[in-house]
Image (tube, rainbow, N blue to C red; front, side, top):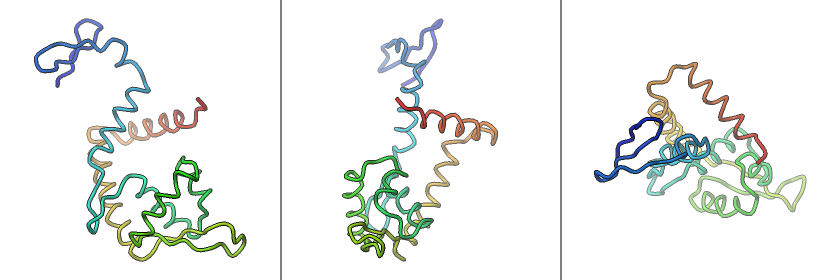
Length: 160
């Protein structure tokens, strides 16, 4: 698939037939969606026989840096509601990467901790993520990367 411009109209050559994209190339939301799809396309990675996701990496990274983090705070940090996080935590727990313990302060709440196996897996994932970041930002200057991150953070904090 090749994208070209004919005048001010973006055209995609799909199987030899031109397809006008209309206003799509100018929509920030669409560009974010495409960038996310490309960034996550090959993230699924076999680690000790288990396919992990970008969300798994985020969870492990946050738990490594914040031992004893509660599920509600973790969900908020990742941008999920607590009910969506519960199955993900259960999966990581079944893999031996995370453990849940009742909070000493509030027995109704759970504290989450990364296990030794989780730290080892996280080390592998960090290397993988950094290598992918290099590919994603190839051809960009350090200043461009900082600008892109700054703009994406602004977009992420807009209340739609």
